[in-house]
Amino acid sequence: MATYDTPAITQEFLDINPNCIYVFPDNIERTGSELCTQFRDHEQAYGFIAKKFPDTDDSSYFRPEEYSVIFFEELSKLKRFIKEHPDKTFYVANMCGPSVNKYRIWELLMVHNIVAKLEKFENVVFCW
Image (cartoon, rainbow, N blue to C red; front, side, top):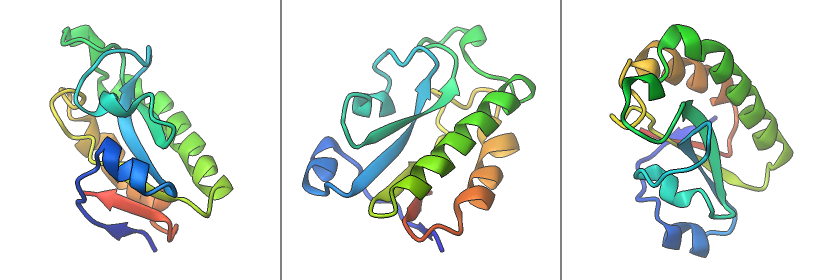
C-alpha cells in the first residue's frame, strides 16, 4: 500500500536518494520556472501535466471538463512508469497550489483518482 508523508523534496534530497522519483506538476510546454518546475531537468523528476502554459493567464489553467482526458492519459502513463520501476520510490506532489489549481482540478478530478489508481503500489508516497 502507498503511504502518506510530507518530506521536503529538494534537488539535494533527490541527489542523495538515487532510487527516488519526484512526480511534480508541469505544463504542456514543459517550460517556465514556477515552484515545482525547478525539478524539470533533474533525472529523478517526472513531470505530470496539470497546466496548459507556464503563465498566469486564465486560459493557461485547465478547467475540470477540459482536463479530464489529459489527466487520465497522464495518470495511465504514470501508473505504467511506476510498474516498470518497482525499485524506485515515487513521491507524488500535492498539486493543489495556486500555480496549477485555479479551477479546482485537484479537488474535483485529481486527488481521488490518483489515490484510487496508485494506492496499491508499495513504492508510492503521497506528499499530502
